[in-house]
Image 1 (tube, rainbow, N blue to C red):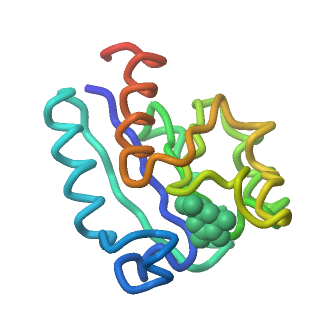
Image 2: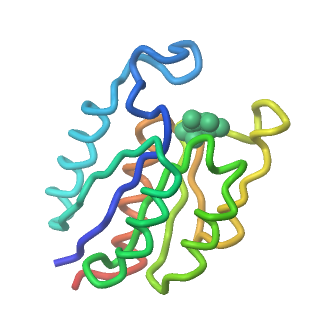
Image 3: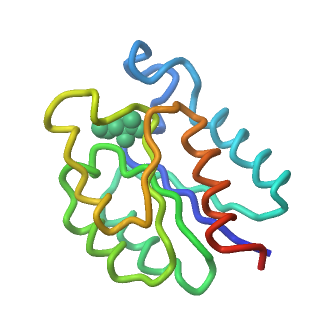
Length: 146
Ligand code: DQA
């Protein structure tokens, strides 16, 4: 069975109360439930991880290859700053799909640059929680059913 790691980066634990005009009112546990429901319907398994700490994210990516077929990651603010997360993505051979709730290309200039996109297999942004659902479909399509 396909096993996908979903990584939520910094401040995504605050969804639902954080800048609701930008990120909406859906909290992370509701997003995680949607992801789990979709995974069930796709007959795959998912593991969900959230951290506000760059090094912890680097560690889970680095240890992911043995257990997971692909990673879906919303690196959040680290998207725009983290050479360490980019290098971790480059270092592994399983595909990594980048997701964002918002369309980062329609926002402030500093958000329009992703250090992760060039090393990700693809990126989905601007569809709210549905970005993760679309990424799950893409991951299944990419890896096939194992
Ligand atoms: C985000 C976009 C980032 O610019 C921001 O720092 C986030 C969330 C998104 O999902 O839209 O925290 O990754």
